[in-house]
Length: 260
Image (cartoon, helix red, strand yellow):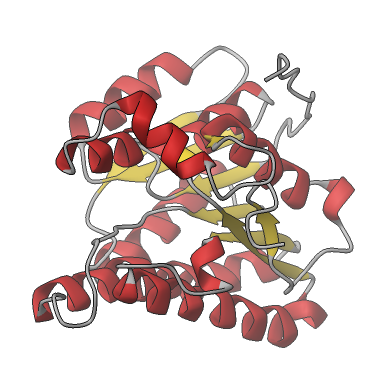
């Protein structure tokens, strides 16, 4: 792969909330917004990782805050949005990146796995969006919901995940139609396999080496590799910024052509 030269974004003064920001894609998104000048509230369950990230990203020119909690808790989501808006002086961009995945067919998926998948991937995303919309109405804004290419077509042994991400996609489309007149864009972003600790953990759990796993994941991708978290983050900033000002409601795929 040729060296990836990352684009330069300017989000100076923008107020951004990112969920699932203490690892993987969410962390890359929070880091990219912060280095692009935004004021960012990062949200996640791990207080240790969240505070470490906050301290690393803070500098003299921007404000970085961390609010710990479980996205499945509606009270936490409502408080998170209100506190984020208060600390940042409003909200311009909300990114819902928190998510879980279980590898199982319908036969093998337990009630707990199904309920947890929907509680995190669907309910948590909805709770944050619902709480954020009144603040975004005040000056217009953008919601980016991290869905998946699994929302576009089926994937093996991912029945709960596919169902949940399909719900995120359709929810995003409906909100985009409802709130366009409020000056709010809602963008569902659909990555394919992304090289994160979560993906690498899946390889480990299956007893597959990293090289074997990455090669396996890349096998069905025309561009013959998996995506990086930084590439997803850059697509989020593109969609959330002025370059994406006419994008709303329709899924943006970043999957190397895997669903082409």
